[in-house]
Length: 160
Image (tube, rainbow, N blue to C red; front, side):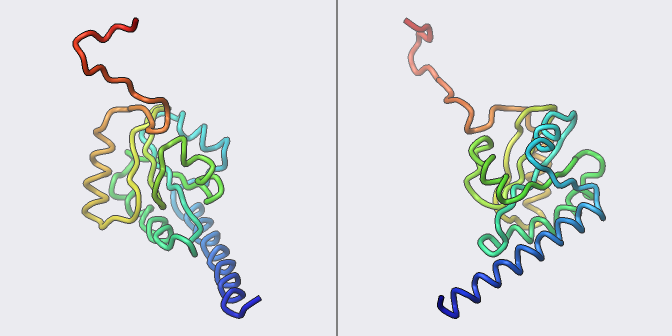
């Protein structure tokens, strides 16, 4: 094994351990919850507005750190209007198709058991606040990965 590859593997393991410590600190020092698969389902079905951070391995997607760090500040800004959860990179990869995730990290917004939308990647503060306000005003819709919308282009929309 080359020295460079060995260093990369050690560095990735260190970053993963540090990221796990960050998530644990968020769990204990803020209202953010760490969700496994069953808890994710319960979180989505719970009443009110929620956002879930879909993480990725921090050595592969460093923006994951940034979004996790500012998440408590975003919650403070929106008061009791939002609940927040974080899912692991493994679960995020498993659930990405369900929510149409194409870029990491992503904040998935849900309300009363339904899908609202996604803010993907890192944003500056003004963009986050504007986009989150938009999510809070947006109606529940269909997640991008569920079904294919059928739109009639002709005058007759009846099936034959």
